[in-house]
Amino acid sequence: MQDILNTITTEIYRQDDWGQVAQYIPELTSVDPRQFAISVCLADGQTFSAGAADKPFSIQSVSKVFTLVATLGRVGDQLWSRVGREPSGTSFDSVILLEREQGRPRNPFVNAGAIVTTDALLSGRVPKLALAEVLGLIRQMASSDEIYINDAVAASEQATGSRNAAIAHYLKSHGNLQNAPDLTLGTYFHQCAIEMTTTQLAMAGRSLAGLKHAPRVISQQHARRVNALMMTCGHYDGSGDFAFQVGLPGKSGVGGGILIIAPNVASIGIWSPGLNGYGNSHAGTRAASMLTKAVNWSVF
Ligand code: GLN
Image 1 (cartoon, helix red, strand yellow):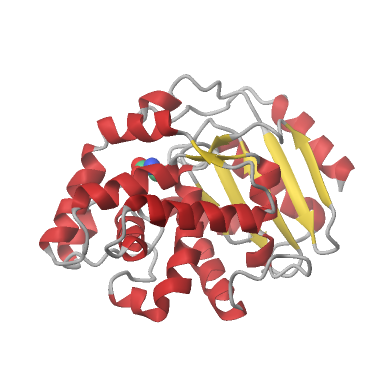
Image 2 (tube, helix red, strand yellow):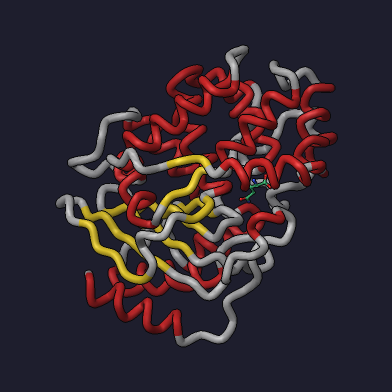
């Protein structure tokens, strides 16, 4: 495995096109796109890494997976009365389907669906408590206490987050937001500003992959469902292409991170901050496809 990851890393560093870092969160615009890391946890408990695997990055929408795990644990199937389970075919921050579907977002991984999921987790508590729950869950899943929220990134997104604010208010107008929009949004921006390394991310995916030594934080039934949503919705309007190229459930974030689950086989964390046109990591997607080809892990 180490040889495979080294070869992928060498190949990635040879490329000229790294994509562009996210431009709409000021704090993320200064990140150098020419960075790469990959980590893989195997079923036997071994972890392999190559590249900058110890460098923390902003997990952004990858956090939606962990919030979903926490919320399913808290409210169970009731969540589905407020959020759908269908791919959207739209960008992560799209508002277009919300009006047609009367304020019920298509899935928990587009921003609108994640804001509703965070709202369900918050359920009348102060944001600090909900954030402590998500952070505590991630630390437990990753078996690492060295995972923190970057307050500067959260503040930076809060200052420029008019589109997410519009989404939250629109959800509220349809009765699909229980808390004050500012409270839910503040919680959401802070959850997106969590920083992790690829090693920690791969470790955190072990429970979803159902690996033997993983912390038991999620039922098998819920893990299957989260994985199904990652496969069909985890890359927004690029989800079909990710399934085509990689063949595994994956969740991306605009910080350039990708969490990939090979059920019963492995959990993979990848990071490269330059994005493609869908807002998913450009080099990260390439590396994921090289890896699944090399080890034959596609579920298809
Ligand atoms: N915090 C980002 C936003 O809400 C997350 C988006 C993403 O990573 N795709 O816009």
